[in-house]
Amino acid sequence: MNHLKTFENYNPLNEGKPGIHFAIRNKLIDFLKHKPEASFKETQEFLNSVQKGWKLSHDDYQEAGGKEKKK
Image (tube, helix red, strand yellow):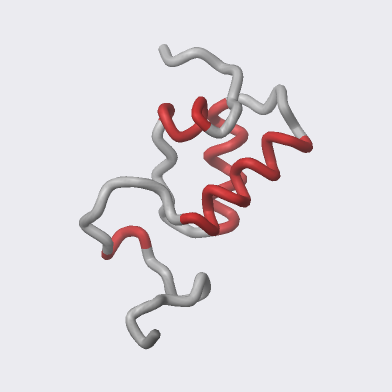
């Protein structure tokens, strides 16, 4: 299992694969459960505090339960 990365060592900027890391996705879903009216910008700021440099896509935001429409 040496091929698995810990959350602390995960850097999304070094990954070439699309998609969202399961740990970040879980944080995103939990955040939106507790703050369902959070805007896309608020959610981006939260995720950036969890993982510096994380670029949240609007699709991932909406898939996790975000309500703000894509502009």
